[in-house]
Image 1 (tube, each protein chain N blue to C red):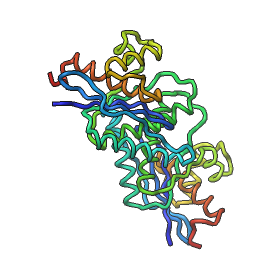
Image 2 (image 1 turned 135 degrees about the vertical axis):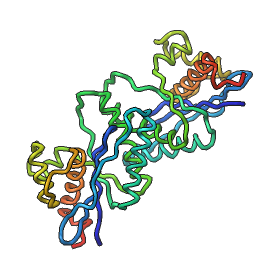
Image 3 (image 1 turned 120 degrees about the vertical axis):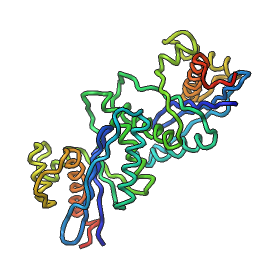
Length: 167
Length: 167
């Protein structure tokens, strides 16, 4: 059985998503993109756009799990962090309402798993993503790359745990 | 026509709600309570409980608007604030998915409108709520009182603006 994992990099303006397939012969990208919310709309309307966009991805690709960026401990701008929290909460509910388990991964964990270095710079992360998914160029915008990295991190760990792989 | 206003005090553990009716002969309480989320469940499951609970209130009482506590500028504990943001985002989406406009009010504004004092202590706010809604005792827990205060604030301002009243 081929299982799909959805990675999500949450944001109020741009939420990146990436769907990766865990097949017997390796990992491959199924789809990736962003859900944008109209900056001039009300907060509630913007969150509803995110909810609808993520719900559509869940319905279309039926992932077995959602790998979601974990909360940080420290944020430079509290208001921005709280607004990101709004978006992240909405994404969690979209997953729950589609019976999709949410697995949080810290950014440092994702970097460590993909490159061996929890503080890997952006370029190193891009190379790791391109190599694994056989992409000729790094995915843009960065939110998509981050989402794919989350999905890959989940797949690697699932493989290590021996769950969710068709081998 | 009698219009209902829903006040919401968002929180991950306890979300207070209060429904107030704006009738020609004054304001009265229709219903008030809390939506609790099970502390031992996953974040996504807890947010789904909040979404379902608030959606039920919206469906049952069909309020014309949701008065929602505005974000603060400063928080003592960032992580708690971000988790509150998750809950608040979910509540905004529940409103948007029920076509209910969300009107944010700052805590200081609510206090000012209800008591004339933007820094009114809790006891003074409770007296104002009890007097207006003819309640023998202050509503408990405090989340319910805060939610009712938000709804009352919206009603007072709507009356001043001349909208949403049946007079």
